[in-house]
Image (cartoon, rainbow, N blue to C red; front, top):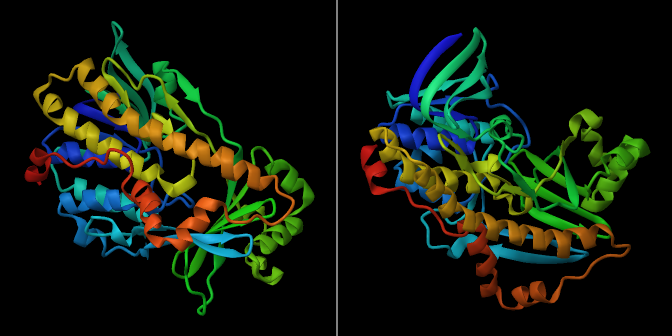
Amino acid sequence: MTALATQCCIAGGGPAGLMLGYLLARAGVRVIVLEKHADFLRDFRGDTVHPSTLEVMVELGLIDRFLELPHQKVRKLGGRVGGTPVTIADLTHLPVREPYIAMMPQWDFLSFIASEAKRHPTFALRMNTEATDLVEEHGTVVGVRAQAPDGPIEIRTDLVVAADGRGSVLRARAGLKVEDLGAPMDVLWFRLPARPEEAGETMGRFGAGSILVQIFRGDYWQCAYVIPKGAFGALKAAGFDAFRDTVAAAMQVDRARLDAIASWDDVSLLTVRVDRLLRWYRPGFLCIGDAAHAMSPIGGVGVNLAVQDAVAAANILARPLKAGTVRVEDLKAVQKRRMFPTRVTQAIQVAAQNTIIGPTLKLREQPKPPFALRLMQRFPFLQRIPARVLGLGVRREHVADFIRAAG
């Protein structure tokens, strides 16, 4: 077994893990990030980069290079409720430099953060290396075991951070308890080619028993078809042609348009979970991102909550990690800082699930816009309220001055 040592080891090369690794390395902390895959190329991961994350890039001096990556700008969020067009959120008035959502493939986002992190000599990224277990001594986590291409490794470290997603192996090994808040739906993701004459407006369609979200990605539409929880088996049993007929009706397009998805292999199932840890830490161990709180896809906020977790964790932990004095109280401070926005965001998502998503999936006739939406159309300034909640989130994090200066 190969033995390594560092000040912080992060399991998971997603938005939370790579951003935390970058910020810690920028502050001079020796850090190793483990990513179990050989690359970042996976479809239908969170691709929404909200204004809160763009502001982090501004604070770090990375925004100009970041925006050179391929992306689409979403300045307003709208949709159709039944046959009525509505605008839900207008982000153009947010008090930030980049007042829009940047739609960017997550592999580009992650590759960019990794490349910036590698500029710092204290950063190491080990791809194709999966964290499998914790090393404990006298009730304290002192390291992590992993499987690498050339064999097993053991990394001794002052802190292990689990950022390995909602199915976190290390969270399970740590024995931390999860509170399940429930979700009434799952989501089927697929792509459809975009036509030159299409406006490219990202929107949600709410119909009789159907919800479909279309996200414009330049030359194609990324589509999310919402289904009742556990209904995928019944859909498959009804046959792929029936599925394409249903989606064509929900999108209000010609059935021939759906021939672009040829089989179930072109459809990806997201099993929606909304949960959170009661306690995010143990001595020598911390969970952040989806490992600490799995978010619903409502609002596409998962990436941005993960980045905010990383910023808060770096602000609190960088100095004690560098000095070798990190304590349980420091880990507790991270949870205290991030639990409130987690609770509020999940409460909003659960309320939307219970009052909008679930009831819409049971409708037999076309819905009508509720009073609140009708009011937003009459008084457009009201659209700034959901835009602020969605775009900036709750308790927005700012990169600490000492980390900014270290760049």
